[in-house]
Image 1 (cartoon, rainbow, N blue to C red):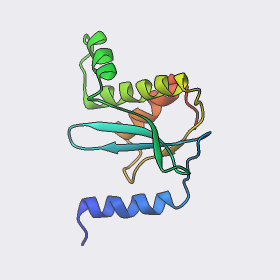
Image 2: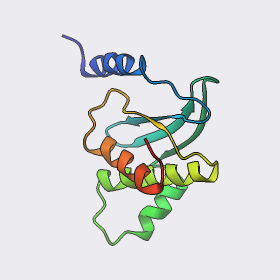
Image 3: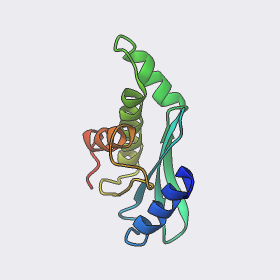
Length: 124
């Protein structure tokens, strides 16, 4: 039996066979650890990261402090990461992306990042 991380990596490889990001429609890749969440837009043609956002970024921490009245959970923070990524993408005139859940289930924090990005103006 494979370890949980190895299973996720196998799922991610299987998903990545059909997903390819370009400069016009980059791939929105999500990675979550137990403590943090990271999202980035990737151009697979150049093998380069266009931009990124995570819950350790100053912008997200500021957004989190502005809405401190809410009881913040990891899901709420993930939603803010999606919004922050969408704001950065708008500044670079990127509106359409391809979502890559990274082998994680589309639920919880991964779903919150996607919803935050959609709310911020990205389409996928």
